[in-house]
Image 1 (cartoon, rainbow, N blue to C red):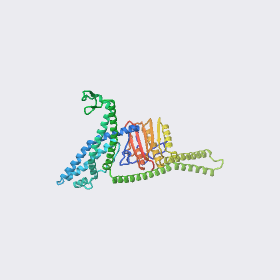
Image 2: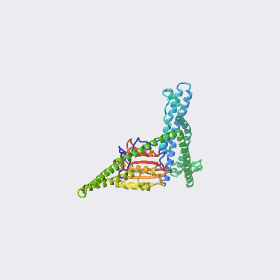
Image 3: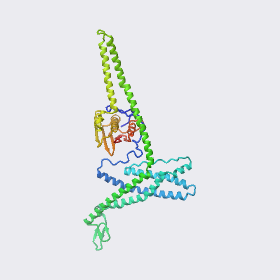
Image 4: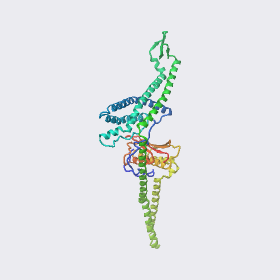
Length: 478
């Protein structure tokens, strides 16, 4: 699905058009800060499968973090030792400043691990900037880099935490899995003899106690299951503590988040004002160029008829000309009514008064009638969104369905709307040609700006050749 290059305000879904006032793509294509999606669980798994998958990811995370924890701890120890030891020379402070700033790299790697293995995205802190030019300015900025020093603290704490997490994973999970599978691999153990010379094939405790009977093997399996169960919760607790440390020490501070939030509100306020102004200009243009022109033409035709009726007598009245003028006026009235009705629907479709599900059902029917063999709709909204959110979701769905039909040449389109935890998530998936991007000046960029005005975000996944998946996340109430 490709994106049109000359967008305009979306209209009635029977003739969908592009959204107005496009601007540069924002969060939807790359959600920033703490306002975008932070975690994404695997799709299509049962609750038990999700729990098992989460345990596997957390256990792998503890093992993957161990080398980084060791290297980071050595880095901090070397930095502090060299920096303090060489402080009396001219290289001590520059070296320490450089290594403080360099600790940000460990934060980048750790956040990448958390995002890829735990599915949680932690925003990066504010980039390093020197307020003053020159070498002394860089040294002062490096020594005063709060993000770098917080990364130092994290690396110091991460070493014992990572070591403990890896030990717990190996001791409880590996030994537990070994106990659970003991009846399988016991047969491959070498034969041993007790003090009486009797042969045994199994693990031994001392010289005369062997796990080679079904009762003892059952105890081994039970013990392994208990170890795994305990290990799961220990790992979950340790990983949860590490999540808190990553958010608190490797992410932005509350002050930075507040500043970003203020900037976000200023941007969305400006976008909302621009969107309202664009809507008013569009309404004025449509009224001036459409309905007003029709009414002017009708008034002129009716004025001509009135003059003819006032000046002509019964014999000189041209009935054919009068009839044609009345027919033209009647035609202008009908066309003006159609344009006014379409304009009203473009502002707020009346079917939305019956709810978003009814509106999307009508939209899906229109899409099927526009050449798409199949439009699947799934709506799960335990609580009805506010009117503004319903309107935005409806026009987003109309725009994305129109793009799938017109540009993506899709044969099947799926629309789903799910409401959870005070949010509404709209997803449109099609099997078209793919390649959709939220480029500046494109329709998706306009949608991204529209959803951003209500603290929403838009995400596009559209590899060349398809399929295309566009997700819009909105608050339940604006």
